Length: 281
Image (cartoon, rainbow, N blue to C red):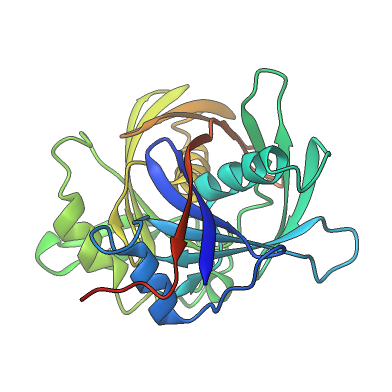
């Protein structure tokens, strides 16, 4: 069979996007892994699937798979690419799009300056809903990080679990080693995305993210949202700030009891088609 796809990125966080409304695909773990292989397949951080909605008043269903094959709950950079994809592919003529994911609904909007604004919904702090193992909800937590000692973190869900810690300098932060340790920490039963947040001033911060099932990426939209929430909760960031990731900048807005709003670019790299199944011999 022939598979049509689009390669996209949001600040260097790269995706393959597939329209599963007009073509049939077999969403097995082997399919995702083969397509995600950067030597024998196309390669991506995440695979984004566009499907028909299952809920009333929703325009599409949005599914996300890591290159390792597992399905995950949310991806903010992917959401921006999703919006640009469905508009450019003429799957909708709407500028404001309501999308269902596996555990939440989000709203996507193409702005007048051709950026994509995403209403990511309200952050979740209840430990059992993150999920995070704690006796009670707190504004921050102490966690045992082995050779790195006791660390203060914020545990937040933006539709997927995030652990955010403040660092003095993201350039020298042990993202690879500490990120891998915390990703699989037993206090996060479904693993966790790990954000390393450096505050520049109340309107600007730098961020590196070790993503669950992927490793460090150029950018992480939900990670930027979680970091913004953590920065506001700690009194370090205003209610609107610029977060600079390896791949570029995102504007994030958040006030308590409100949704997190993310604004940034999404870029189509190329359209492609390939024969399936992939031959690796």
